[in-house]
Length: 396
Image 1 (spheres, helix red, strand yellow):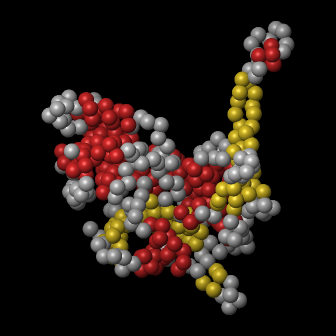
Image 2 (cartoon, rainbow, N blue to C red):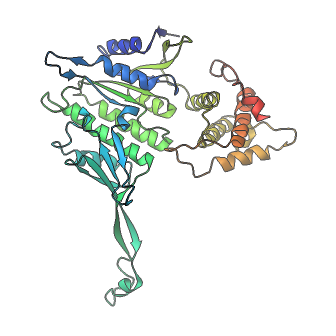
Image 3 (cartoon, rainbow, N blue to C red):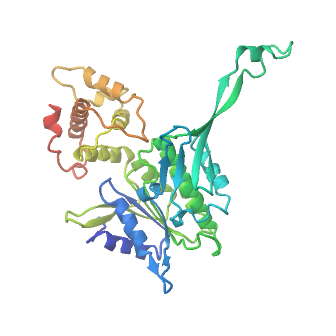
């Protein structure tokens, strides 16, 4: 394996900048907790400088957890009516908002993913959201349709709900589209616009807990945008999302592609090249579930991921049902209990944008099914180095 180690985040960030002198894209896969967000901040800080006039210059347009902090809610707690998202205008992130038709640019992108709309007030620097919906007209309105028309031409009317509070997931989508609109401006900048300072783009996990459909849509769209032949910008993308990584792996053919991990020392990090192919999606997803259990971060949507892995394995082995891949207990020879648990818990109304932690009892069942599955099949032990201290004891 081609592995390079680094003493700390600054050393790695410096190395990435050096690679970008001769490369356009770098793609990193890393588990949560590895230091992806801090790495993006270190990379950004290395591009800062102060000139003779005391002005701070920068070269990196970034999207990470700090980007989301530039937006904050005013929920109108007194009247609960005029809810709005406030913008932190101290940031150069909003430099082109007043002059570059940003609303139109953002709306064109947002229409791909959402069914709500918005208005930006550049005087108060606030965003107000609204949503249109259709309702059935009152009976007397329908009956007023001219005679001979048969059924009413339209029994529904469109209404609009103003100043709505969008969900956390919808807010994240809006901020992501805001960022993409700025990326478009930076890509098109001829050296005279408000984003002429951008030389690097750094994207760290654009939207947390993406479902598969949105992971593919977002990654394809991002790759298409960045691959514009006239673009002069250099890009780093880091993620813990396996499908998002795999799609970008295939889209950004000429990127340097790495696994980012810890080397065992307090601040040490390592980069390992992925080779010519990305890791197998369901194996990577299984490794992600394993790490989530080790870290104690088990959420309801992990049952959906586990079911998908069981279904792929059953299909590979020629079985019609994933229950064939679940170990039978002596008191449950047909595997009915665990199969029923997977069926029920993988079909709950769980939001992948806003994960909820599992109940302790469900965690025990999840760990038991997961670890018995890993032990039953000959997966590479390097991917699953050791059992978490509480996994099997809690499951029994």
